Amino acid sequence: MPRTSRAVVQTAPRRLEMRELPIPDIDAESGLLRIEACGICGSDAEQYAGTIPVQLPVVPGHEPLGIIEKIGDKAARRWGVDVGDRVAVEVAIPCGHCRACLEGRYTLCRGRGHAFGYAYVPLSTPPGLWGAYADYMYLDPHSIVHKMRRDIPASLAVLFNPLGAGFRWAVELPDTGPGDTVLVLGPGQRGLASVIAARAAGADTIIVTGLTRDAPKLALARELGADHVIDVEREDARVRVKELTGGRGADVVVEVTANAPEPVAEALHYVAFGGRIVLAGVKGFKAVPDFVSDLVVMKEARLVGAFGVTSPSYRAAIRLIESGRLPLEKLHTHDFALEEAEQAIRLLAGEIPGQQSIHSCLLPDRRPA
Ligand SMILES: [Zn+2]
Ligand SMILES: [Zn+2]
Image 1 (cartoon, rainbow, N blue to C red):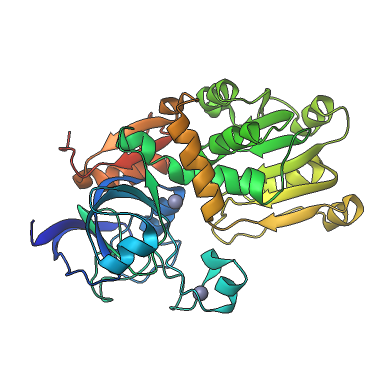
Image 2 (cartoon, helix red, strand yellow; image 1 turned 60 degrees about the horizontal axis):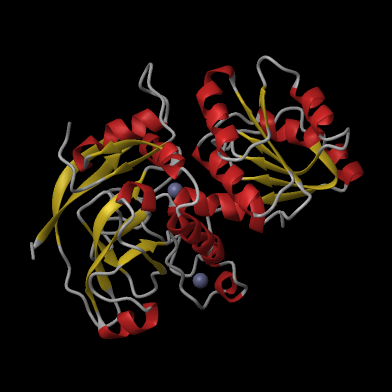
């Protein structure tokens, strides 16, 4: 057992460095995870750029998949896992006692300070290894872990996170069911995951919008279960949505585009009377121009914010991955070594000309290219 772990540490906006951090001792209630894979998330790019305020220095990486290397007796009993088990780890480390936790909204827990969760606890809080851009990660006593089969490649198993988001944002929050028309704005990894989840929930018609340069992602959306796709730069999306929904609009609109606030205002035009709009794409705190609130009133539309993923949706995602029913490998486009974290983030953020990714992950076992 090594005494230190490599960890990518963010020291300032757009500054990452590799460090060796001590591997902590484990008590009866905690554990140590050997990271197999860490998914790269849209919010990783924002954390890297400094648009999401995170206390630095910090080890990023909030989508951990790994093997339990060490575990205390109490933790093993509570979590129902043991040394050698593969687990998917939830971002949130909830206190279990605050009002949010007691009301079942544990992803909003602030009981241990601002957004206490993996990748958001700074190095200065012992034991420091709070993120998955590393060989090892500390498992706090309040961790929420889900056991997963070990025979699935780590880079696919780690899709539990974006797929979990699909189930929570496109199904759980808007209560999507058979007969519903679901419109997904944005064909990124979360949009495609929303298509998969809506299809699994029995949605009737699924429509996905994207830009002209998103053509390959829109084609993949079709392959994963979308009935129709709309190129918003070449088609009049309002007209197309009307056509495709028999003039009614969509029962559920899932807004997962990044940065641009305009689709939020557009969603009001796409939604059906009595429909639900889920807002999950963050916009760097920009205001939404042309937001016609009367449309919310007159349509009695419900606007729901989505922040993070909860256990039922993670479980649905994990079962779907384990079922092998879908060609999920088509979602996964890039593997990176730990040393390549910066490249991985910049690729997802679209900062590498001529290259596009859908889902990518860091694999600590991998050697850099
Ligand atoms: Zn994430
Ligand atoms: Zn709490």
